[in-house]
Length: 243
Image (cartoon, rainbow, N blue to C red):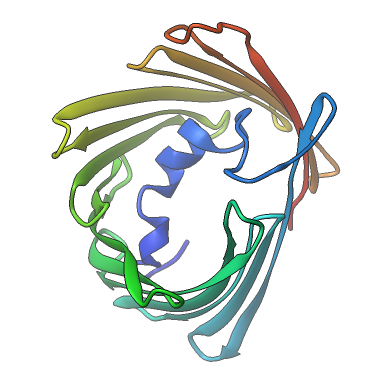
C-alpha cells in the first residue's frame, strides 16, 4: 500500500474501476471491419529510475500514446506527461500534461492541466480532493474548466470476495443536469469476477471476467440503453495480460 497521496489521476480509481473498467465500450476512435470493432492497448512501467521517480509508457492503438514521468514521496505526487492524441482526421496532435497531488494517504488535494501544443490552448483544467479510510474512499473533482463536478464513493464490503459497491454523481453547472451511476462487483471464485452497473440515464451494463494463471484475463461484457430508440444490446470480448 502506498504511504503517500499517489497521483492526481488516481483520485477515485477504485470507484471508477467498479463502474467503468472493462465494460463493453469503444474508444472515441477505433477500427471497424465488417461486424467487428477493435482496439488494443499496452503499458509498461520502469520503477525507481532514481529514488521516488518512475516512468510510465502507455499506448492505445489506434488513438493515443504517451510517456509520463512521476515523482512520488510521502506528501506529494507530481507528474509530467507528453503524448500524441489521435483526431478524427487521422492525424496525431501533441499534448503536454502536468499534475500535482499534495497530502497524505488519507487526505489529498491537487490539480491537473493539459496544453494542446498546435493551438497553444489549455484543453484540460481539473482540480480535486481525495479521502481514504478503511471504511470509505471518496473523491470530489472538478472537470471541464470547473464546469463539471464529479463525486465518487467506494466501499469494500468483503475483501476476500472482492465484494464492493461504488457510486458516482456527476453534475454539470452550465446545463444544470445531474447524473448518477451505481455499480457493484463480486468474485464468485478467486479468478472469476462479476460486475454490474446502472445509471440514471437508463443504461445498464454487466460483465464477467475470468482469469487464467493469475496474469491472463478474458472479459465478456454487455450493455443496454433503455432510453435509446435503438435498444439493441452491445456485447464485447476483451483479453488482457497484466503484471
